[in-house]
Each structure stands twice: as structure tokens, then as C-alpha cells.
Image 1 (cartoon, rainbow, N blue to C red):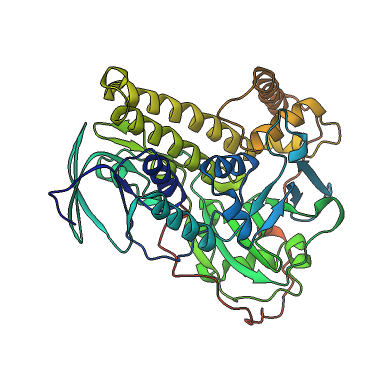
Image 2 (cartoon, rainbow, N blue to C red):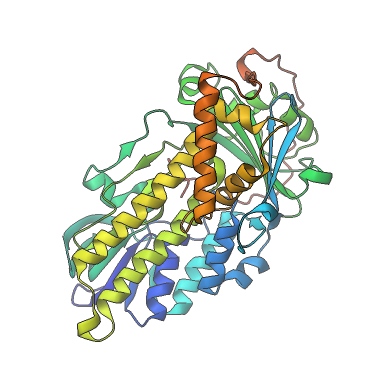
Length: 451
């Protein structure tokens, strides 16, 4: 690469968000380069998608490619307490308000990320992998330069899609962590996990405990992603090696023990932190932040990829508007930066409220109440489906009413209080070692990365 060449935009990160932005801009005729420090194919978690994600893929023209990859249907969410009290509660995407997609899918990111990176190349973007960024040496409107292992790169604009590496956020010390969502995830892939039939078929399974929660995500016909997201307090005090904590939690949780009775996979888990943060402001001189580079949310509702793709559309649109069309129609940099910041803040605030609600005991009480109001439930499902960028007025009103009910529930019970399942007080039941007979579907996991 030569600093003599001036690109229209340099995108940092070739994950789904960065690749989506590159696809948009390259198809609009812009000269785009994408830089990524990693090698492809590569492992990531963040494997469960939303109906809104599906629509974003369709708009990009890559949905058919997605559906040709190994995947599993996702019709809704099954939520249980770890000891089966109150049974399972089901929330189906078919009940969303509006005409959006009524189902989604899960997929191993090793397949998805490879496909998105290759699609960016096919669209005309130059993609450089194994190309680490050393420093951002200049960052002004219309004048950006970065130093990489392969030499300097100049561009008019930058889109930071660097995931939890947070190139701009770290450099400018913009990352602000959430006050209590400082969790740690222990996870692995397994074969032979029992999948529910009947109402729970093709559902993302979420199992709730006082100390955190489990995910069970079918990835294809046979493989399942299992993870335990622990609150920071448990992570810091538990006298068990971090690589053994998934098994420790499974042996104390009846739902997981039952479904993993015949599981095949690694006996030790991988570990990542998923500290929730935001990097406000989300735009600045010469750059836009998208995806996990802008904000990372606890993954309980699988919002990450949707936010990344929607943010990519917004940022790419800003660059396209500034660099194409008659000069008289080009919008100013200040206008586009303000537009992107306002949009990202609005969507991020909504997503944060959705995630924070999950950790509210009052919301849990309403979640497991047999007397749930159907219209309020449908409004919640609409947000759960990822429809947070253009919320219909009626859905917004119902969500406000749901938040009001939670506020009342905290002070005076309108629904029965749900006693939380406590892993630390449960009696463990020893399980035989998992037989490692499955072929690996993984690369080394970068530390602190769920992008």
C-alpha cells in the first residue's frame, strides 16, 4: 500500500458491520479499503440473530448466501429458570407488530464473517486481512491517515468497525463502562445437546439464574453453542479455574444437566469478558463509529449484530452522500456527523433499556407471570425481534406502559414475586466427562472479543 493513493474511505475491521459498510460504499462507486488485523476464517461468538438482522441481510443482497451456509431456524425465545420452576415461557417472533420478518436464524460466525468479508471484495472493496493498525496519525474531515504493518493508508473518511478493539474509543479514552453490566462469559460448542420439541422447537433457549444466565443456541443440524454469562461478583469470588466454570455451572443447574446429558465436546471452556460500554460521541472529525466500536451491550437479547448492520447502513450512507452527487446536493460533514451521532445514541439508548430490563427482578416477575397482558407482550417481542430503529407509536406506548408496570412491581407486587434460582446454593450432580469426538469449528479467540 502506498500513501500516494487516496481512498474515499478506510474501514477498520472486516467483521459483518465493517464489511456491510464496505459493500454499501463500494456499490455506490466509492474507492474503499478494509483493514483487519485478523486472519479469516476466524472464530467469533454472537451467533444468534434477529428478524431485523434478516431484513438487513436481504437489503444488502447477501441473504441467499447466508441461508446457503450451515444454520438453524430461530422462531423465538424460550426462557426458563435454572430449576424449571414456572416451566418455560415462550416468546415467538410471529407475534411482532407490523409486517417485518417473523423468524430469524442462528449461525456459527466463522461461516458468516468469511462470507461477509468475501462479499465486500466482490462488491469492489479492497480488503486487507492480517494487517494490524499501529496508529491513527491524522483524523480530519476529508483527510485521514492510518499507519499499518503494511505502511500508511490515506483516505477521506474512516469508519471504525474494529469491534471491542475500539480503535477510536481507546485512543481517545471515550469508552465508558456500564455501572453494573460487567459480566464474564464461559462458553463452548457441543454436539448431542438435547433440543426441545413442541413449543420450544427452533427457539433460542435462555436459562436464568441469580448469578447470571445461560444460552443454548442451535447452530446447525447437530452443533449447539452453550454459554454461561456470570455476574462480575461471581467471576471474582468463585474458587474454580475460569476454564472449568461452564462445567461447574452446568452440574448445578437442572435444565442444563438434562439437556447436556449426552453432550459431546471440550471439557474445558473458553472465557471472554463482555463488559458493557459505549464510546460516546459516536462520530467526530473524519470518522464514524459503528457496531461494537461504538457500543457493546450484554448479549442476552442478541442485539449486537443487528445494531452493527444498521449502524453500517447509516455511516456508509453519510459517506456516500458527502462524496457523490452534484456538489450543490452534497451535505456538510458537520450535518452528517450530527446525524450519525443522534441516530446511534437513540438506538443505543433503546437497546440499553431493553438489556437493563432483563436484569430487573420486577421485569422477571412479569416475565414469568401467567397473567401477562398480550398486547404488552407483543410490544416486548417487537423490540426483541430487533425492530428498534423505527418503533411504531403504538409499540412505543405499550413499552412505556410495560416499564410503568415494572416500576409499580418494584414497590407493590402486581404479579407474584419470582424467587430466583441460585447456582451457588444448588447441589451439584457430577456428570461424566464430555467425549471430545467433534471436529473443531474454531480459531483462537481474541481476548475480550464478542464482535
